[in-house]
Image (tube, rainbow, N blue to C red; front, side, top):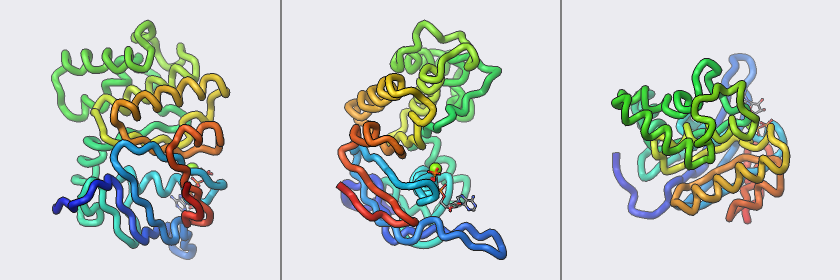
Length: 230
Ligand SMILES: Nc1ncnc2c1ncn2[C@@H]1O[C@H](COP(=O)(O)OP(=O)(O)OP(=O)(O)O)[C@@H](O)[C@H]1O
Ligand SMILES: [Mg+2]
């Protein structure tokens, strides 16, 4: 694994993604070139089916490109096997989804600490860290609630804290405010803004122009290609 000598965290050149369904092949990404520097905040917009989630999944090492180059922090992702890929994902990436994806049986602290359990970290340290991140996202007074006892905005805060607990360099959001009302969505975006100011790279898919405007750059996708960047 060689370090490329520049300051891009994400380097994509000619990335293509084809979903092979046997008879049918879906071209989800045609030719994506994307460069992201550390500490940038990027918004991704585009119509339904344009390839946004596919792109985010590739950025987050949940999936690999069919063709093209992707370097994450200087590492050629194509060369990694599944174990290394999930290792990188755990260390460097935090995901936040539209529907929070929390575990209903677990309370706030336990949900936040989950990624650390997979890493075999000592229980006391897990609880300490989970509490720290619960406080950071403003859930200090809800630590022992279960997801069903929380509002949508609070559930999304739990999901953000869970994404942070491994101290990733990149936070990826797939329509993280999609299920929230405008006011709550704004509160969630203020958290992402704070995280960005703390040095995290943020990449967020959204249909909402107001949410997109939090980004320094808006990347527009149409039919599997980036058509506009500003
Ligand atoms: N696992 C899959 N297998 C086959 N085709 C897929 C798969 N995932 C996505 N696709 C197809 O790839 C294209 C891009 O899908 P993608 O989910 O990336 O779109 P999107 O921009 O995130 O849309 P939305 O705004 O609705 O979430 C679509 O045509 C979709 O049907
Ligand atoms: Mg999507």
